[in-house]
Image (tube, rainbow, N blue to C red):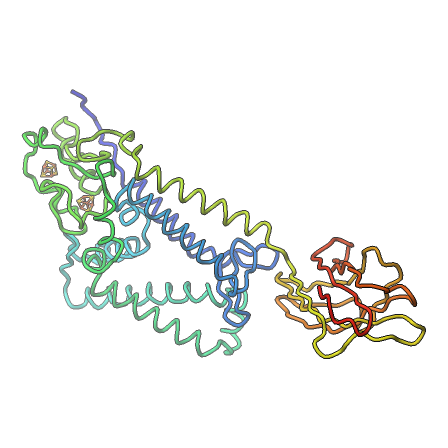
Amino acid sequence: MHHPAKPRLLWPWRVAFQWLCSASLLIVPFVRIEGASLLRLDFAALTVHAGGRVFPLESLWLFLLAGLALVMLFLLVTMAFGRAWCGWGCPQTTLVDLVEWSARRLGIKVAAGRLTATVPQGLLLHVVCLGIGLLVGINLAWYFVPPHDFFPHLAAGTLHWAAWVFIAAASAAVYLDLAFLRRLVCREFCPYGRFQTVLVDAGTLTLSFHPDEAARCIRCGACVRACPTGIDIRRGDQIECINCGRCLDACRKVMAGRGQPGIIRYTFGLEGRGGRALLNPRTALVTVALLAIVAVLATATVQRAPLTLKAARSATLLPRIVEGGGVVNFFTVYLHNRSDREQTVRFAIGGGLPDVQWRGPAERQQLGAGEHRRIDFGLVTAAGNLGKPQPVELAVLDDNGGVLATTTLTLVPPLDTAGGH
Ligand code: SF4
Ligand code: SF4
């Protein structure tokens, strides 16, 4: 038998991972890539910043796809690791852990997720919960008003009232949660916990207390006291278990004192079939679906044109002969600058027909970020060139001459209303 002198405990890993997740949430709003946020919803401009790129809210299908990918990822993680996200990554757990840690520092007794405090201790803990609530409320507001705007507005007293309302509501919700609900949220309210019961299968990671080992249990109760959700893992897998591994640590410590390994273990599936148990049709199907969605999303994002062009023949102005004998055809184009920066673009006319002249507003246009612009113009052919309908190519070029978008327009002789683009 293996006799560990000092038990290998999981809590340092869990705490490190929890804080990595929570610190990321705190830091993400500060990260900007070429002026765009890493993740932010800009209500004023009706855009979403994601990964340093800016997408208009009307790109709804991209967001639906991203949402679907996230759902698939959660399905997969839950199938493989059960509620490990709850115990190891979820900010709710991290904040409650922080409150319990603070409670212990204040001399409050914490056991199985329950706190026993005197009135002054309880009041002090409420102050701690309020402080954490406020910090979280402000942090969440940064996902709408980025810190580089938030702080100057705060200092100048010009922060929008909606931001104050949001911070007050979010802070109050977090305060009430931490002060009064804590683990009850994970146990009773969190939809993810409920959802998980239908996702676990024979290969899911779970904490197990194998019946074969039960004889070694000295019934010390350390695992039950350590459990934040107040369950007894010796009774088998339960929905309230957040896979945090505290019972495992507690048991390892107790059993190390007796020169024995712990009785509680992480196993894939209740029968402990090992990681291979994850290779089943269900997880394979979800993995393939997830990879397919991510591939479509990545392709759509990379190939997303920074500018769109739509063109139509003028509904009111008919082709006619102009001074000098040429023919003018009238069109309307709609440009949409889908990028987050100003773009200077110009029109170029190509195709088989020589000497087609642009008539209308400047051929060079400056479009603000996200701007839509309608441009009415005419194309004039040289005298005698237009005996029959002729196609021309209208291209929109960027400053360096790169083609951003093209469309084909048809120039027709007067009195001939056939054709179009
Ligand atoms: S049973 Fe163990 S792993 Fe599950 S919540 Fe309780 S302490 Fe955490
Ligand atoms: S900590 Fe280990 S030995 Fe103690 S009651 Fe729990 S399972 Fe049994």
